[in-house]
Length: 257
Image (cartoon, rainbow, N blue to C red; front, top):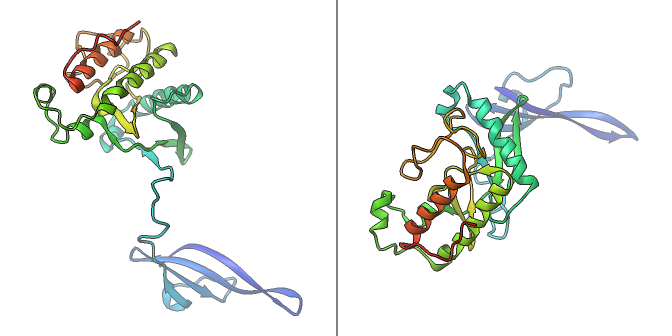
């Protein structure tokens, strides 16, 4: 038996508060229990020592989710990332990018709330939760880029096409802050109601930075492998590919000014 938590309880006897019992929360075989222990200066050794022993139900607790409530997304490194000696540097870079975006918000850029600390180190990042990626919404079969280009695009909605205006606006907002996304793909865009939102900023770099020296990850078929530096054109070219991928045509109304 492992004691997880204990709290002393007192009662008023003849106008004086006197010790009554210790409420014990203990775990055994992965199950939580609560019970009372009446000896103040010693601890119980087994569940059998406790009075009023009850199992604490932990499954399916809490209120049911309502659509009007706000959910969060907790981003954690995948397990293979822990083998990377540069993990701390990569997370630091992403946090600094997200902090800059939090100070300069945009409706088409994911909302960042902050980090979660574990033993004095950043272990997770906290974002607003969005419904699904653009890739999952329109291409659930995960056809490759050319395969989807030749498909009927049955799941592409007009609101998604209109949402491209917001993505371009978000990209230009990044550029105004001196940042380049460097990995604009349908997998890095999410649906937030009728709005498209840029997410996942671990490939963001400042304008002019070397992509090779900073271990920048980019998606196969969605970037020019000959490009070695972080430039605004990286995002604008990827956006043009995205627009063609989603709509099947190039729209001259988009001006990369």
